[in-house]
Each structure stands twice: as structure tokens, then as C-alpha cells.
Image (spheres, helix red, strand yellow):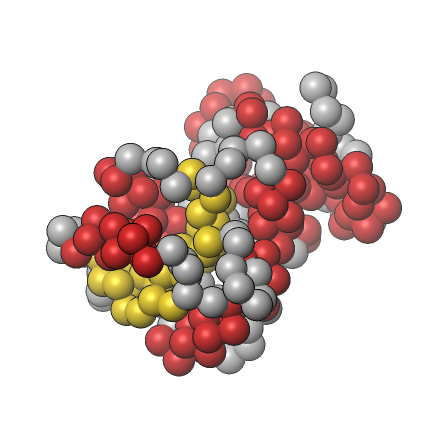
Length: 224
């Protein structure tokens, strides 16, 4: 969102025409959300996102040509602009695609059967800089695949202070900033400061990527 403008600019990447029409209809009823473009494939999505600079991209995983995971990664690495947040759309909840999408830079994912009002609120939340909540079921999915990248992430986590490490562990357990403040008996502002430092040191954009880093480094173990 641009300064002084609370309208959220959304771009839709979906090769199923009825789904794409349905998403556009959902957002057309919202006074603070504009659909600035749509496409059915990853390659054109990359070009159009560069031109249109949306705040949020709704990204189908299975696309012709460049799939949603590769396209998400390429969007996250765009230079010359602040990359939009990506919400991945998927049909199945427990799917390696979900983990790989988060790893590629997505801020979260939604099932295609998600209620319209929840899709709208998710877009607003992500546009404001938040990651979508990651329930226990989704954290188990992350844990299932994260061990493959243990060495690559460990060196980043080692740069954290002891307190930042504590905060990261609690983020990985699904706690909110307010819950972390209560658990560690520190102020909410202090938690927010720690979270900001964690994101900077791990080179992640939001809580979804922070959870990935916690598992991939071995800091948090499946079931731990």
C-alpha cells in the first residue's frame, strides 16, 4: 500500500478460469481492495507484477510453465521495488508444495475452499506486513521437510542472541507477540524489537519464514 492510501492492490495468478472469476468477484465487493491484474501462468505473472507493483499476489501452486513455487521465488527476489507479499492457493493442506512455497518466500497459504470473508481478511493482514497464522498441522508439515536444509540455516541462527533465540522458538510454537511477552515477562515493545532483529539476521520477511528457519536450523525439532 502506498503512503496515505489504505487500498490494497491485489494480483491474481490462477489458471482455473472459474476460480479466478470467483476471486475477482469476492474482492469487487470490498471498498478497500482493488484487483489490478490477473493471469493464468507464472511467466506472464512475473512481467505483470513488475509493471503493476501490487501489494499482494494470490498464487496458485500448479501453473503451466513456471509453476507457482518458482514464480513466488522470482517475485520475492525482484529488484527495483518492494516485492509484493505472496499468498499461495492450494487444494490440499498436507502437501510438500506448501512447505516449498513458504521456503520460496510466500507469507502463507490458503486452501481454495477457504471462506470468502477469510480470504479477504488474509489479504488485508498480509498487506499490512503480517504472515498468515500457521496452525499446529502446518508446523508439522514444515517440520517434516525442514531437516533437509539443516546445515544451510544453522549459521544464520547462530548469529542470534540468547533472548532472540528464545523468541524465535516461541514464534515457531505459534505464539503471538503478546503471548511471547507474557511468557518471557518482558514488554510487548521489547518483543517487537527482538522480532525485528530476528527477521533482519535471518534475512526473512515475516513469521512464516522465521518458522521455516527455526526448523531448518535444528533449533526446533519436530514435536518439540
